[in-house]
Structures are given as C-alpha cells and as structure tokens.
Image (cartoon, rainbow, N blue to C red; front, side, top):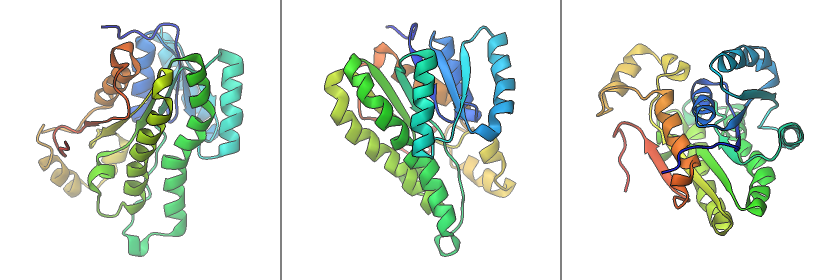
Length: 252
C-alpha cells in the first residue's frame, strides 16, 4: 500500500488554520511539497508557522491570496505554478462561520460564508482540475462538515455551503474520473480548534454528550483521512464523502 506522495506538489487553502495546518503537516510528512495558502493579512503569522515546519524538516511554503476572490485566486495559482511547478493535489479547506438564526441573518453574513466556504472551491478547482486531468493524475479533497449533512441551528449559511461542497465533489468526480483524478469530500465532526472553543461552555458540554466517541476530534484526525485520500492507495475511491465525526452522525 503506497501512502507516499514523493514528488507531488500539494496546495492547501486555509492551510495555516487549525485543520489546514495539520493537513499541510501530514502531506509534507508523506513526502509532498506543500503550498499553504493564507489571506494576505495573515502572511506574517503564516511565515512564523512556516519556520516551525522548516525546523521539522518539512517542505511547506506560503502563498497569500484570497481564495474567495476568483481573479486573485487565478493569479495566485498561476504564480504558484510558475514558482513551484504543476499542482498535483488540491485541498479546499478554507472556511469561516457567521452564525445567526435565519430571521436575524444579514445578507452579508450569508454571502460571506458562501463565498469563502463554497465559491472558493469553484475558484481553485476550475483552474486546477483540467491540468490535472491532462497530466493523468490528480487529487482534490474538499472539506465539508457534519453540519452540512445534518444541519445545525443558526447555521443555514454554513450548512448550505457545506452541503454544496459534496454536491460539487460528486459532479466533478464524474467529469474527471476517467482521467486519473479523484475528487472526494471529508466531513469533519466537531474538532478541538479555536472555532469550537469560541462556543459557550454550556453548548460545548451538550455537543460533547452527543459524540459517542466521548471526545472532540483533533485536526490530526482530519489530516489522516485527507492524507489517505491523496495517496495511490485510494486511487479507486472517487466521489465519496468520508465522515470523520466519532459516530456523532451516521450515514449509509
């Protein structure tokens, strides 16, 4: 079973966040060269993280552009390719929340979440999927959420975006499956991260009670699933949604 990614170039959007940085670390530890994408305003902090990666002997570089902006994304991806070569692996991990009940949700809250969580996946994939297909090998992994499967109070924007992630995955998988490219979704449950720590303690306690595994997931749990789907061992897995949620939500 080949789980190595030697010689591959991987790009991870949201690659310096809690889950994204774990994915970047995992892919680099599997032998890939990794480009972790962050917002331009976050570049200084990202470069500090890059120094930690380098100290571990991992090859991770930083690219700063807004993946919610189609023009900035296209320019950023071409700049990465000019500097580093063809991108073989795309991980769409950029995401935000702007929670509110629908009756109080603003148009801006709706549009912000859809742009970052859903549009960004279109912006990157439309540039990279066809070149992968032309070369006969590629991996695209899109990060969804358990709340895109089951819904969540106060998250009509987030749940809609994350449900859309897997619809996009299934459709694109059908377009590129014959050309050596796989497109899959990983749907995390509740992960121990700054996002969950910002939730009031009483709500966190209720969430934890509903997780049969008895704990929150870790970013490494998600990174392990992503790493497997990027490997040659997963070459015949295409168009699927892999839940990583501690049995919190079970689907056929």
